[in-house]
Amino acid sequence: MSKTEQKMPIRAVVIFAYDGAQLIAGPTQPLTTANEEGASPPYAVRLAAVSSGPIRTASGVKLIAEPLPRAVTIDTLLVPGGPGVHMFRKDRGALAALRRLCMRSRRICAVCTGAFALAEIGLLNKCRVVTHWRSCAQLAEEFPEVCVDPEPLFIQVRKDMDDRRCHCRYRFESRADRAGSQCGPCDKCRSATRRLHEAARWPTTVQ
Image (cartoon, rainbow, N blue to C red; front, side, top):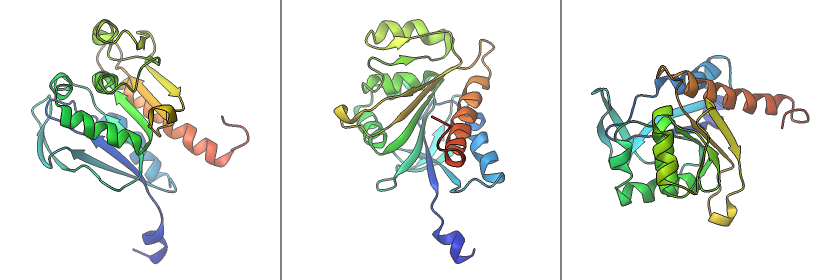
């Protein structure tokens, strides 16, 4: 590795893993493709959890998670959905850790029912959001302060969170299409990645 490569900053992408989460290889693929096409700075994706070690996903596949980063500035925080999200919501320690990571993240992305985790810590209050189509009614019922729109595949929200001591500027909530595929999350990440790099190339034309 050259000295130039060693000094090059990276965009840290953290997947907040927990038992019962769905695999989200699809949404991270646009970041891998961006790296292959010469993204600068490049994306560095890591899987992290409250406790490092094996995480059993909803499909039964086990993944090895790193400990949650303590000092790294996070470019994108990905919160996966899955049946385990409802147990995750009951873990006050995990929610506190999620809140701290959100405060250090430039952009937050909830994939499918990962929106429940963000709603639980109040980040979606007064926001227009979407989740997996089968869970839209539940999200609206449990969190009446959240504006649930069941129609879009994904929603991009830009909101200043300083009044809540949260420094995120972008938040994305996504659902899969009605066949249950990963098209929605993939489209969302492609859109986010494209907008970021277009803004870098044409800052006066891209909002």
